[in-house]
Length: 336
Image 1 (cartoon, rainbow, N blue to C red):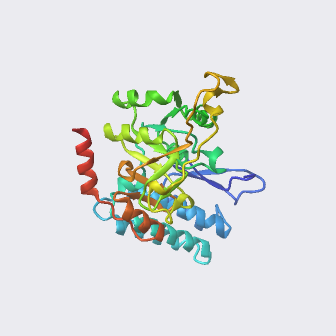
Image 2 (image 1 turned 90 degrees about the vertical axis):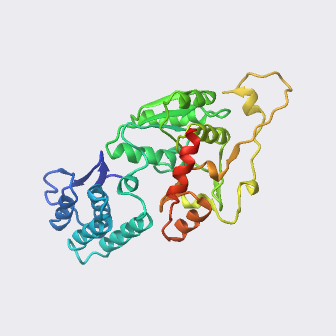
Image 3 (image 1 turned 60 degrees about the vertical axis):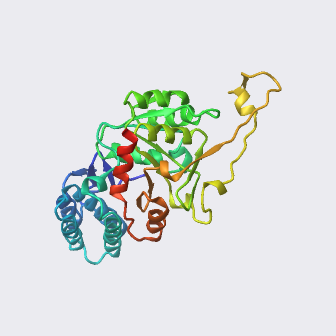
């Protein structure tokens, strides 16, 4: 983008003050939603689309102030504060309504849970490459990481190398290093050891196809990570854009698994490492059963267990009602 009119940076809203252009280029930093509302009213930012973006960011900023006792009332107060700033711009009200829908879908969850999946200081283990190189944007799994970093959280990433094509070593490590996000590269068979030693806070992966019941097909090696995470009571999250959810596919058994050329296994970067003529199996994906998935993160919100019910509700726009007691029982059982 040639001119950064507005952006979310380290948990703050940053705006280019258009009132002083063209003689000065000044960026204002806002840490309070009331400051953002005032900036809209005072025309620090202008233009209907930009006003809508500013309102959405301001409401997200104000979400930190929601009280557990009555978050709905607090949230409506936020929306009213922004609705009164520039009443003519329809984009403003479009953004407010969209934020209202996000809040409604998550109203059964505590304010702390709504704000983020990642705590400050978390170490995220990821597999393959689900970043900008895979999406032409911020990514899916890595978008969750980047959002937490942009919110000012100290996040570290452990990247599995992802044999045989080495997407983790070649692509994920490169992306994160370029973004200056701390990343540690491991071989795929080291993940269990690190989980056992308490060095992994959660696992976040992408998905190539998610079935209607919440079964997830992703790069080969994902399923063992889910099993290990289950064994060690570590949350296992899947970042799934709506375009990757296939409601015509009832479950993971119906997902076709691509078989890749054997040369990808017998050769590394063009160099042969296995005997000539050896038989090779090289499935590109495996399927993680939905019961091993803690939650599926989409652009519309987060679906938790039971995924067979909450995922369709989320996609259709109805609020997903997470089974919190059942989830707590599962987590206690895993620790035994």
